[in-house]
Amino acid sequence: MKAVILAAGEGLRLRPFTEDKPKVMLPVANKPILHHVIDSINNTSIEEIIVVIGYQKNKILQYFDKYSNKKVRFIEQKKQLGTAHALLMAESFVDDDFIVVFGDNLIGSESLQKLIDSNYNSGLLITHHGHPSKYGVVGVKGKNVESIAEKPEDKSSQYIATGVYKFKKNVFDTVKNCVNEGELGLTSVLQSLLYQNDTIGTIKTSEWSDVVYPYDLLSVNERHLNNINREISGKIEKNVHIQGPVEIGENSQISSGCYLVGPILIGEGCNIGPNTCIFPSTVIGNNCVIEPFSSIRNSIIMEECRIGSHVTMANSILDDGVRINHHVTIIEEQMLISNDNKMNKIQNIGGLIGGNSIIGNHCVIDPGIVIGKGVIIDPLKHIYRNISKESHVM
Image 1 (cartoon, rainbow, N blue to C red):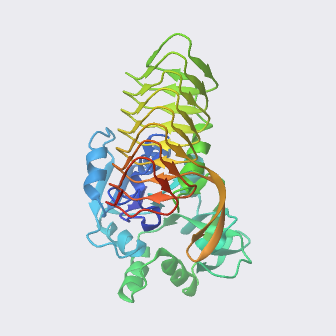
Image 2: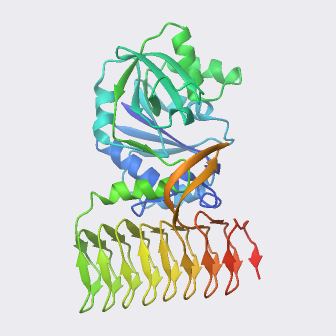
Image 3: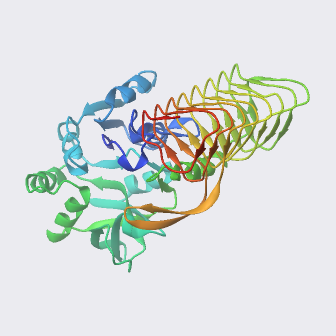
C-alpha cells in the first residue's frame, strides 16, 4: 500500500512564518512538520510515499535531499487549486488501495496503521475538536459517515475530519468529476461518495493535531517536548543548573551560571549564556546565540537567531535570522485574537516576529504583536501594533 501526502499549500494564516517557507516546513521540536509526518508513515506498513508539493517546493526538496529513505517520491502541483486537485496529481503513481495524509497535520503511526488495517473501501480518521466549525465536521452513525460539511455554523457534531483517508484506486473517477465541476476540496469528494451511497468508515484518533495559526505552533511544540529525554551532546561549563529533560545538540555550549528547566530542546552550534535562564517548553534552533542574563520561556526560536543580553520573552516565536538586541522585553498576556472573523481566546501569547527582522536596544513589544519579515525597529521603541514586512520603525 502507498501513502499520498498533500504538501503543496502555502498556509496564509501562518504568516509571517510562511512568507518564505511552506507551512509543512514550519518546525515542531526542531524538525519540519512534514518530516514528522513522513516519520509516522515510515513506522507503518506503507511501502511507498508520494509527496505532492507546490508552494516554495525548492525548500522542501533541499531539506529532504538529505533524507536517506528511498521510498519517498516528490511530485509537483504547479498551481495550488485545492486538495482534490492536488490528489489528482498522484493518480498515475497509485495502483491499488492507498491512504491520504495532509502534510501540515501531525498524526501518530498507531492511528495510521489502524486505518491501513481496516477493511474499509473508503475510510477516514476522525477526532473530537473544541472548535469543529473550522474544519470538515463529520456526522457519524455507528462507525460510518452519515454527513460531512466544510466549516459549518451548526456545531451539533463535535467530530471533525483529520485529513487522513483510505481510498481505493477507483476514487480518482470521483475526484476528477469534482475537480471538473470546480469542487476542489477533498470534502467535496467525500460528499460525492455519500451521494453515490458509498460507505465511508471511521476510526477515532487522539493522535492528531493541526497548526492553523502561528500560536498553535507553541501548543504543538509543548506537546512534543513532553516526549524528549535528557540528551546532552554539547559542552556544559561549570555551575550550570539543568533540571528535567533537556536535549542539547552537538557543538553547542552552555556557559557558566545558566539555569535550564526542561523540557527544553537546543539545536546544534548554539552558544547560550552565561547566566541565562531558559524555562520549560522552549525550542532553540541550530546556530543561535543567546547573550548573558536573558530569560526565555515557552518560546520557539528558529535557526540563526541572535538574542542580546537582558532580554525577557515568553510565549513568543522568532523566525530564522531574527536579531533582538539588548534589554528588549516582549510582554506576554492572555488575549482575545480575531481570526476568520471570530474572536478566539488565547491562553498566553507574546510576540510573533518574522525572519531576518532586527529589534533595537531597549524596545518593548506588546503581547500578540505580529512583526513581518525583514523589519527594522530602532532602539527605544514601544511596539503596540502589527508591523508589515520590510518596514523600518524609526
